[in-house]
Length: 544
Length: 55
Image (cartoon, rainbow over all chains, first blue to last red):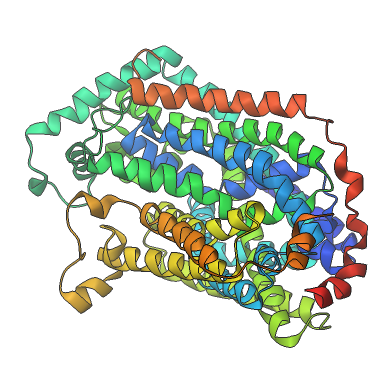
């Protein structure tokens, strides 16, 4: 009964904040970039809550239980690159250029910087095509927790979640999104701090917990050393742990062997792919354009840094330490053996190890993480359709623009929900699709974004060539080379009869590691080979 | 953290150091910027037609 009352209050507060956003939304600038006068606390928490989704908490938390504390490299990148570099070096130039060019979306910023409708439309189309994959994965993560906790039908939970998010994104625009994000960010922050305290208490303290990890590895994983992986059932917990050993992992407190498959996976896909890819996330970049001065960005660095370490730092450490708890309280088994799968570890652990009241709070944190990311993704996709594609075709100041944006959001929600139905049985897709989407964004947008902000000599042709190369190389790598995606997408097998065109450790290298340098090189070479942009455009972009 | 190897230990301390860096940077620069008056965000909607025409 009490739980239901709290849920109703929570939904009512979300509805109220969406309504506040709606009342304050009077122009397209209000809808698209929250009027440009957002409070730093709201901005930082919105950025953080959008950044951290169920993928980070459930997906990557489960990966930490499998592969251990080597994932802390991702937290370092999340804070140093995703917050410090992003806010200190990119935030203010983005904000100022956004104001000078009257840009309301990320593709619009790039398009106007290079005076190219093609760039804006191309960016909008890419966001529209690729973001639903990531969105559907986040949607699945949030819905699965509703299902697990309330024991309701998956389809019903998916429908309820979609309706709630649709409501406040449509009504409040970015103001509504950011206000609800901030509330959800506070809930996530508090839940994580409580979780850390309770887990260290349960495993006997900080040092004792980490020290016991070595014992658990030796007892439950190292003992698999004499077993052939072929004797184990594919996908089973022991298979996954044996696989990690074969990949070069040596313990939950140790890095995998240098340049082994595991090292390449942790460093290129998880750490670099996600850690660097965050710089070119359309739904995050647009937040730099929502504040009125550099002061707000500076203050957001403080809030954002603390928020991210409390999210990914804690969940990765907790993820690894779940192995100790299960070993001590579940007949000497490790986390995967107890929960049954990577994606199940965190939900299973919360319900098995934590008191009921905390499981309820954590459920809220997870739903908040999912909803805050989803709302911003839907907003980014809707504006990509309305602002970046429709307005470029139908003309500026079209009275139907905001309507098209809202219709676009509904269409993208329908597509994302449909994908969530299709992907329902593949929970691991949460973490994978996150890395794919981040790698795509980095390879396609990052050189153009960096060059646009800091290199006046970069040309329109250089930007277009870079974006095309980034798109082609990333897509090729995912379809024909990367060990996981190429195999599962099946196109390579269909065309060439093999899972991947290359073999060996190179197939473990993330698409971004190959595509981003090529995309950047293309931007430099083509820009230097083509005529510089007009001084008038450069002045408009760089001078007040 | 004695059981961490050099790689994981480095990640752990760099993670904490970067969070601390964010806090220190935020505190030092909390109210340092004076350039907001240069750019007037209130004119965005009003100036949109002119900027589009110029571009």
